Length: 110
Image 1 (cartoon, rainbow, N blue to C red):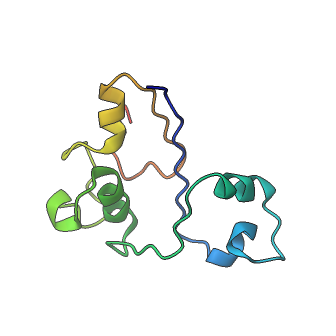
Image 2 (cartoon, rainbow, N blue to C red):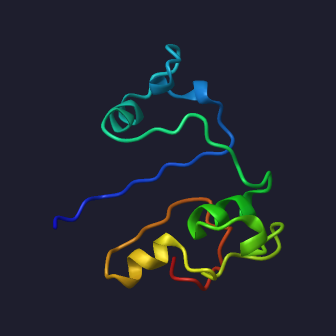
């Protein structure tokens, strides 16, 4: 089995028309367009919560908000339940998270 790279780009405050790969001709995003051409793009995704921390925690933990029990910004996600990033790290694969990490505990090695 060969190792592949996984890149997840997730944004929450930009309209779909902010990237060229979504068909908006005014914006020039050649690198994002190239990534989208060789990967997957989800154009009709919905958030499980209108609040950032619960929404991001449900994404990484693959659980609903009622299961993560994170209702707002006051409580960070601490890997319970174990998310896919932790599972990858546990199997020896390097995982990097960039930007918007306020959904997790600062002491956490995510």
